[in-house]
Image 1 (cartoon, rainbow, N blue to C red):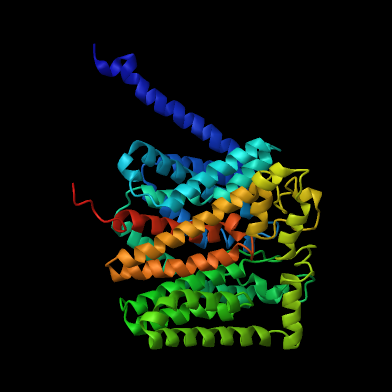
Image 2 (image 1 turned 90 degrees about the horizontal axis):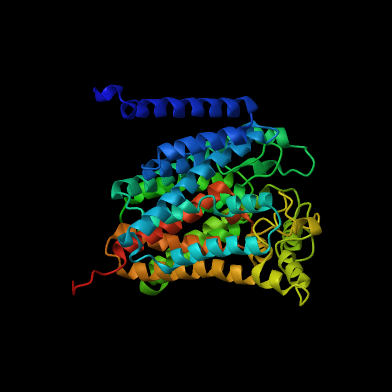
Length: 488
């Protein structure tokens, strides 16, 4: 009998037709809902399955959509519905996480020389899930909290364990520089087109919308601090390359000017804190090895910080003393931040005052992912309405995963720092050595962000920057940081 007419021969085409029919019905039902969240998740699931054998393509999609698209979407949706489309990017990155875990489990060589901070990150993820089950409240709170915390962590594990070709890694480095350069036209558009629309509105700072592609609401807050931090990190990478003399001075000067310009289009006062920290960390070795060169770098940092400070002061009609006092009031003293009762300091002391022998489990283990999230209405946040207990990364971690979880999260930073310091001494390639030096400066800025905002736990674009740098450091450690075993 001709095999082409056998049941076995017909089963393949029939299966394809049935699968296509089911998918057509599924996407048809999803599309008629007109729900951006469902549509983006459905598309991400389909694309993720299709690209699961092409992790590099998933990385490209996550980087491009996460850094250039999702942050701009809220500007064109007054009701904020379009912001839910970011779920699609998160789903793609969770697919990438599964690919990374599968690679690590099935390929023993992929796990070899994995730096300690990656294992600590994995432990923190598992610990957070276990705590959420122990302190269970609801599936909605857990799923939302897990998504916000770990939506981009797939990049960290994939860059560490998946054998991406070096050409792709170099292209991703260039792409991040391009993203930094694109902040200027995006910020100019926001300054010219959107700031005038916000002037005179109650409880809104008009210049907060100048956040580049990192996210802002047309009539709400913006991630201007996250954009500024990203640009300062990119500046650190450029200066580190200049220290190693890997790029022409003219090119670095031009790129640095383009990267710095958006900092003077908005009003991000944190720049006067973050800039000197970056310069101090980056040039600390030069102060010992080449004192004059290191001093020159610090002088440039002081001048840039002074220029930024004077510019931000000039934007306000209030006297300098009043601005300083106001800054101290809502950051250190008792004045609440924005419409919250707590600020960046009192949010920590308030947590400490609520702890006691009546609930030791909450102190040690926390209350589960999402419990302190203000906007989503976490069950602990609802106990203290309008307090803003999840104002910063540190306070959110304390409420969600307890003092032990905070210790694990901080250990990731400490271990990554030690890895970067040791790697800088081993690397022979000047470009990689410069990158590792810049990553150390970035880690210092991320550490400051623990007490500044909660962006490390919920801002998708900023999380990409954080985990990509950790993943890149892990990749450098695995491929270049361990000397070969001569006994083999």
